[in-house]
Length: 232
Image (cartoon, rainbow, N blue to C red; front, top):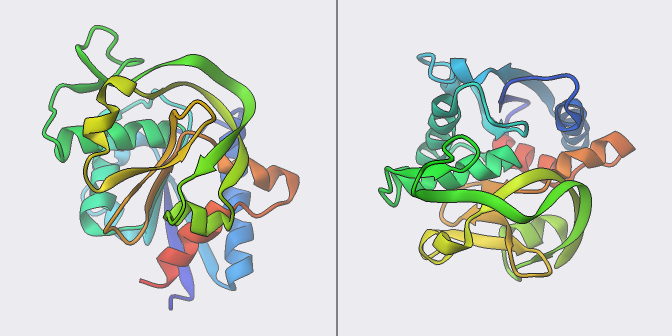
């Protein structure tokens, strides 16, 4: 078990973004609960491809507030985590880009795109939500037996959002026919969380669980990410 865990935050820091305010305290609270020291670094998306940079980290968290300055950099970091068994958490934009990365590099859909950054593309795997989720909290049903249900210890949670894009239902069946599976859906059955089976820890949520830290509560997903990182 590691005494110090190093986490890289993939994203372009903006002090005005609520999620960016919440993530450092969320991880500090989780580290304290586990009795480990935390080394935390923000990685601007333009730097994510710097040689040797990602190898420094025990875990990666792809954070909200996209579009990123470098979509390619964000996808590179996600692919690194997926292919190398590095514990990965993606929230909001980190969920969206995990879907794009999987579509491109696992399914071979090289034309897979995000509607926000490629509005003229023919294959949006991330598309505008039918109902925007901006500063709203909604129930999420967790799949029984999923990693996510195990982390929360229940099968229904309520979490907050700030997003306008999600998984495109047109491609959902193909995207989730393999090891990437839906582990959380809303009351309409729309996917709000996925996880990668066979990976030590690869979880992505459209909601922003980190916000709990701003009310003094340790987010279960932050705790789970660190636990996965300290026990390789």
